[in-house]
Length: 184
Image (cartoon, rainbow, N blue to C red; front, top):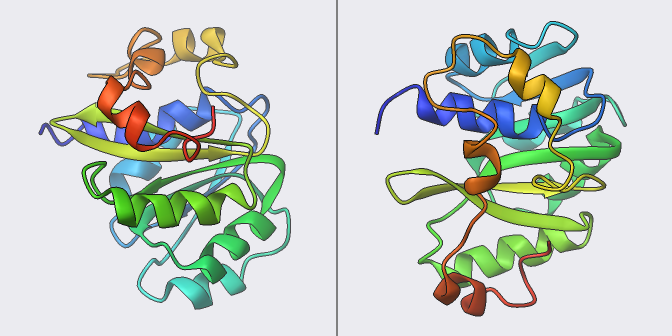
């Protein structure tokens, strides 16, 4: 997969979904590409923290201090997800890595934990069969897309206002497998 697709899709999908994201928390040990994409949104501030000691990193963040969290690490730890919820603003959202959608058992556990805190939980395709997972307290990634924000972005090689909603299309076998777990 082309190296620009992952950071563009991880960053611009949530930042063009949240109504007024001002503070973005990037949790990653290789954040340069994510930081570069967040910088395309001029009215937003970002903070990058290490993913290597995830629980300590999350514990150190203030309550309600982020509107969007980009969690560039795979976790289904209920305590970590509780911290993500605590760090997010009341209408915040998180994008995170997750197991392949073919790993139904692992994903169902993660999605059930997320379901304790988020009203919307949706996987989205980023190409090559890979997906990310968006969990939101308030905003729906296809119904609440901020089109003028997507139109103001320059220099994208992959992401655009058509790719955004299309990424959330799922085949029927995925819909059936995750019926009642994916919340949209």
